[in-house]
Length: 329
Image (cartoon, rainbow, N blue to C red; front, top):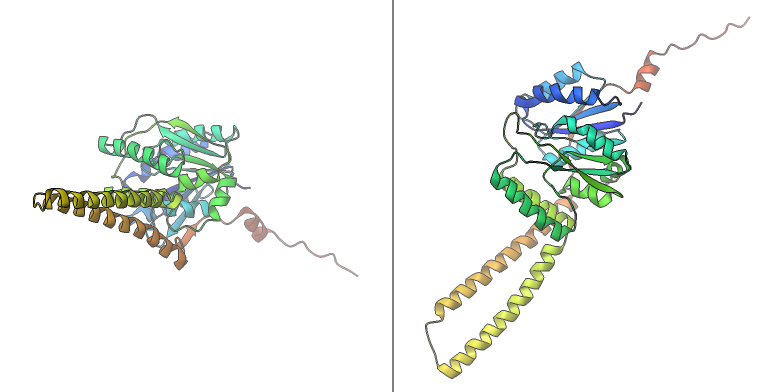
């Protein structure tokens, strides 16, 4: 029988915290009294995480599945691989660092049963550093203005998705994407709830400052053309201002004569405009680079193997004994 709930957990170098994750995750799901499956997606870990996942599969094979990717494709690609393997009517994504308590999964499931097909979450009190908290809030506001996608807490991956949303996501072949935003665009009735947030049990964040910047570029360029449109408008404004400045300098030349005091001002204006032009070229390059990656048509990820029990029907057919034929005289 298909599970009612699928829990997708991307894993990347989480060796130090997996035991604590197991100790809290399985009891929390057992207490829900529903059929569930846990899909661990190993995203090319370089530590002992794959072996620990295999050990856990052998301990609870009836509810555990392990998808092993052949390299590191990033958190969102790992989640997409988990979505492809999921079978539940409700799918929940969860980080392995226990900053989102597994005990909150029941609250997401309860909210989904009210008729919603996408349930996001808002951290009640973030346990991250101050700079990261403020930067995340600022990016949330900027992202909402650019993409018009209303996700209050975009960095929190504890979210629930209905089967209809998962099926639509599985039809996509985007190389660069942001899963919560993609789900929001497909959801018919989305909502959000507040959840607890705890300190990381082990290890450190896998997102560096550079990775966070790249992720926000993926989010904004993947779901909106506003950055290009704003830059086009800025170019027109600067062109008009430059024309007025040239006209003003000509008038000053004819009325006041030649003067050398304005040379450095002109240099400053030129350097500023060169900086704007280079930024515009870089922004255009971001879009062109994503087009280049998309048109190559390479797989989003490559699954090396999947650890799972054979389906029940297959096991039953393998064990079934053929009935003896009646004897004829």
